Length: 200
Image (cartoon, rainbow, N blue to C red; front, side, top):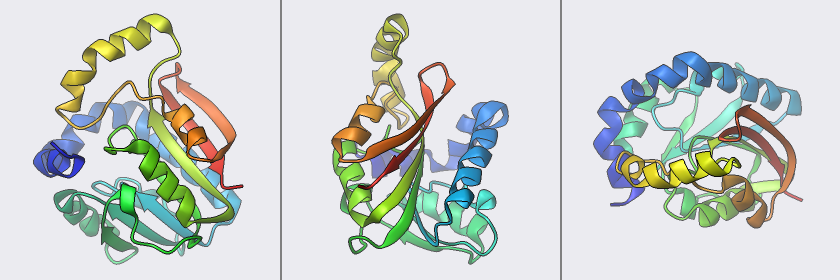
């Protein structure tokens, strides 16, 4: 089953599934990300994997941004939140429908755990960024703790039925896609991380 099919299927319960983590941590981490973005002075911003639009309230007023998602059912919920503030596009992270070097910054929150081919998606993200542009990631990934990593490996097939993979080496994938990692913060062990990467 593709990511599009999985997320169309769970769109109606997606926010309920994430509610505990949203209340405990995700909202404060989103606020942190957008504080970093505002400090960078980006004018044209792309969000890949906008989902139901939970990041939209955190965008600074007046910032121009484009948001993309592979699931029409998720995107329809994001449209209600956007209320005309953004250009919302149905599309696949692995084949972004934008010209190269179109954006000053890209945002991705809990997305590259779900993209079918994460390296292809990350290379596309790098392609559409201008040179010197930055990509801001909030991601969960395979723990550097051996025992936790093995547990994630065991649990991953069950989680994949709901959408994400919980044991991807996303930091390594970002580097393999050609980005230079500027900053990395461990938010909850080495599973949840904030990464800033640059197109050089």
